[in-house]
Amino acid sequence: MFTTTVIEAGSAVLAADANGVVTNVLSTLATWVVVGGGFWAVWGAVTLGGGLSDHNSPQIQNGVWKIVGGAIIIAAAALFKTLV
Image 1: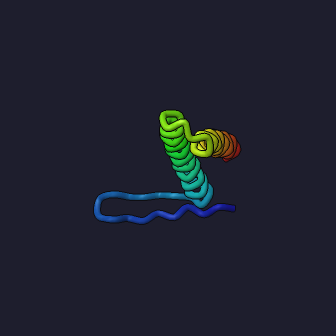
Image 2 (image 1 turned 90 degrees about the vertical axis):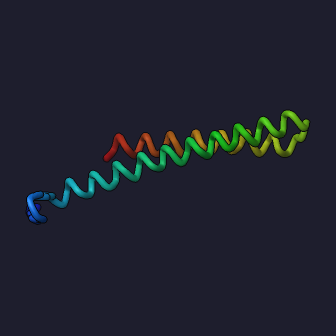
């Protein structure tokens, strides 16, 4: 069903089948989405800290929601990674 493609470049030989390439790309994408969710949660923690130091309620709320959003992004990417 799947064909194997072999490309010779100098002394290196690269072989890939369609299923392996798709799996590798999706796994890499899921990893980067987890990293992005982590950055989003960290940015939310920074926002939360700024709001707490200034006693600024909207900023505190914004920081908490960014942390929750980052956690949801991480959870969704981790779930997707188990499906791939």
